[in-house]
Image 1: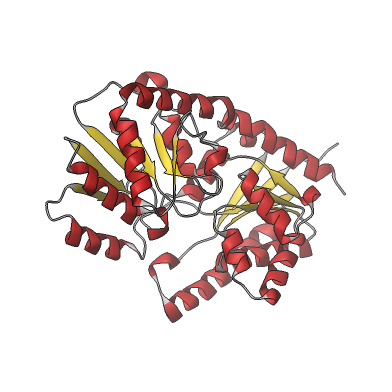
Image 2: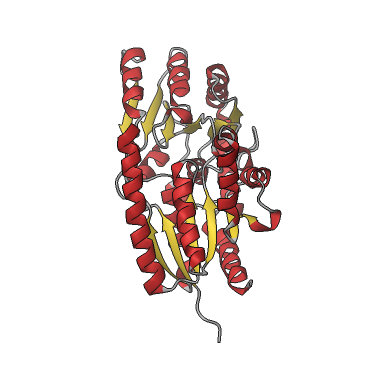
Length: 369
């Protein structure tokens, strides 16, 4: 008799909402865990993102201690078959690699699931010893899981063997079509919905919007997302450049409010500098929103230019402004982009599709020596 598979997740849990948090919520609510037992060890306890300098370092150290204790309790007393670890670059990578090391000490199978588009840039700016350490940390795992083909290439570049890397794209739940109305309206509402950080291109979007607002009547911009250390700078910037308070700064929202934002917007704009396979872009596409996004990282694995979305040059206000102008000025083009965006998600990026792939991964891993 084959023992049942038990998966211990090391992952973020809300609040706040973000791409990785949304992913783990979708995964845990998918068909994967109708037959597979699971537990989750939260990996963030002290809202570390709001700290800087030595305070941030101390918060990271304390977080690592609490995470280690909670993880060991579950590892020793629950006896998982697989440890599935969510991670990104920076200090968090080494913290999660420590967790992977502990799992291997107890002879557990590990999946190191990497999110975020900044890995290659971060890796290349580090000294050789740190690069060697990253490579060795990756190699202790049974699988490195990536959400985009581009991130798979990054891990190959770092030196992880091809057989250890598996690409399984991200997924979202498809909202009901009958609740979505994409009729043309007198006003156009642009939506920026992600963490409020400079590397998401929020300053370029503000600049492009304020220029366009002078030539396009009834054009709105709503900024929605979790606050970060960059939030005070963004708010101060708005005070300086948006004297008439044209930009609507909403800030953090819950799931219900996020759903409402997608329904009431006309165009989703995501001028990020670096990105993997963006959860924010996928969610917007699932609502049939035309998406204007930077041609970086894993974004092109979702968007084919002028077919199901519009790609622009990152850090380029003129390119962004022209993209927004084009999508606004051609209503039928805008409608086609939105319809094709939803079809893209429906055909290849829902949890109905991904669930089967992840179950297969778990089963294959358990059977392997």
